[in-house]
Length: 321
Image 1 (cartoon, rainbow, N blue to C red):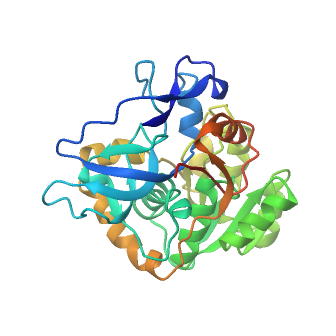
Image 2: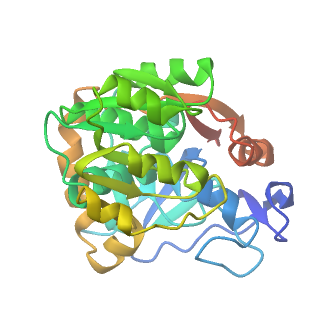
Image 3: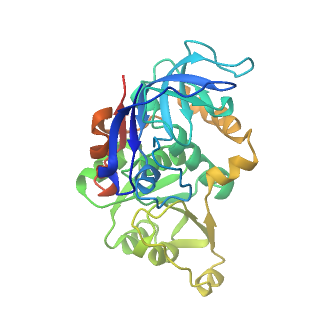
């Protein structure tokens, strides 16, 4: 089968398409991949900077959508079913084999390209907002990186949960993407703290969703209302910020880590529970990944560079078939 391989840890340019053996499917759901989502961890893994470091050569790609070729008894899906799946690695390929607990049925009307953007981003954001953030209806959520895959997912799910959403963006084009995802207001990344204060009459927001990190962190803390929560999802800015804990005392603030993968590795039934909670919103069309650039498998390096250079507007996807 065709697959994208990382053969050296030099970043996005180190990937190349090769013919490799199909994965063994014993006890797993085998999926013929139609589309694969591209995520920031895929960029990190090409440099050996991700927390999981597979041996070279390896196939990156954690989330896919396609058609079930075979499935063990009791998998919950069957041959011919349209599914999304989260495999951790191996997704930039024509075929994957995935644990049944990480394979999810799709609404009929959802395209494979859109479905490939669901598993990592929407399950991570669900974990962030619902379990870690305790989001309540009527609260206000500030979303950084709101035009990217995680950001648009956070905007959509927060709106589905009856929150007010303020999106932080770095350009007019990205503001339009955030509005398409459902953001109530957009504010520029430069000076977002003052803009948030104006929008909230000085009160601040209840939750901050932060996949960016870097120099926005301190102003994110200052943008929180009393008892606000800052959800740390990632560090696409490249810099890991530090917390001055005295800032947390004054307004009873919380900085909350969001490690979806670490959680479901201990609670293996959790992703299926999440999908059950998301299903009504998926079926109603409320949750739909905002698609950005699409690339053929052979142009995986370009797709990875788009995320690496923070140019992505919406979900970046590889078209495999």
